[in-house]
Structure formats: C-alpha cells, structure tokens
Length: 125
Length: 115
Image (tube, rainbow over all chains, first blue to last red; front, side):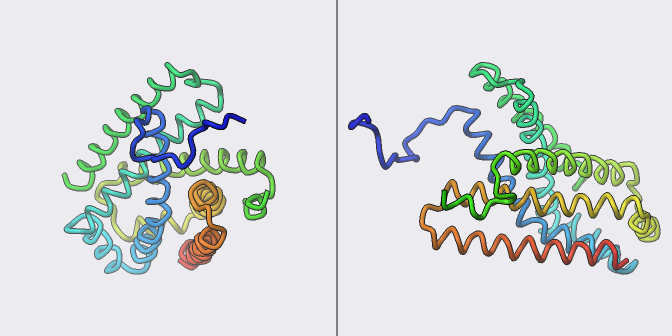
C-alpha cells in the first residue's frame, strides 16, 4: 500500500467536479423530500376531510410562509426527479463518460432550474 | 460487512433494482398527480374527494406509498452508511428513519382508505 496516501481529507478544500455537486444535491433533495412527506400527508389528509379543510389546505399551501414550503418541496421534487431520470439513463449506459457526464450534469441543472421557476409561477401566479 | 445487516433486502443488487423500480413508480405517480392538478386549476373539494374515492387512484396511491417506504429506506440507508461512521450515531439515525417511515406508511394507508 502507498504509505503517502492522503488520509483525513479536508472536504472543504476540495474543488468538486460538477457531476459530484449535482450528485450530492440529489441526496440533499432526497432528504428534504423525506422530511417533506410530513407536510404532503398533512395536506392530503386535511384536504380530503371536509370542504373547509380543503379550502384551508389550499389557503395554507398558496399564501404566506406555507407557499414557500410548497415551492421548496416542488423544487426538491423537480430536482430529485430530473437527477433521478439522469441516474436511470446512466444505468442504461447513457452519459457515463467523463465528458457526457459533465453535459448530463449541466442538463440536470438547466432542466431542474426551468422546472423550479415554473413551480414558482404555479404557486404564486 | 456489519452495515449490510440493515439494508432493505439483505442484498445490494436487490436493493439496487428495488431503488430503480420504486423510482420509476414514484416518477410516474408524480407526473400523474401534478398533471391532474394542472389540468384542474379550479379544483373543488367534491371533485378532489371523488378522485381519491376512485379505486384505481387509491391502488396507485398505495403503490406510490409502498414505493416511498422502500425508496426512502434505501436512500436514507445509503446516506447513513456513507456519512455516519460511529455505529451508535448510525443506529440512532436509522432508528429515527425507520420510525418516520413506519408512521408515514400507517398514516398514508389511513388517509387513502379511510376516506
């Protein structure tokens, strides 16, 4: 074994390639969605309970602080969706090389960025 | 070897395929629900309730819920075993994840079939 191998790497001093950053963001979005299921189940439960509950859920999800939670969860969902589809394509052997992996990462950012903007339009417009 | 005791199916390859299958189910369900909401901008309670009273929608939602259980466990297991080196910390994290997923599962079934 190489005795000079680096140990106790300082991750804050790394310059990560873009595909690495989109990969870690995929995980972060997944954790956000995992916690966000609480809000989604709350919304589903309340909205199906009564007409008043439906109106209250709609109000809570589209105004004030609640609208930011809705947009945040839609954004995490959009990113996780796009990055997940990229993962499935890579499983099929598409975008696996160093070059095409970079393009796939750029595409993930652009496509999810567009969806996140559209989600904002959906929530607030 | 120690960490593989808590993975979803005791088998990495099987976990891998379960993660892909559940991902496809959740992606299709997401498109289905978002598409329904976009197609019905002025949605009212009666229509929403009728939508979730439909057996096909309930079955699809239950399938999405079961997929969420598997997908979330495998995803959180991956994160736990990648980032939490101390066994005690990893154990507590996985316990919290298990409890959350169990509550989601029971609560979700109650919402879907309790309408």
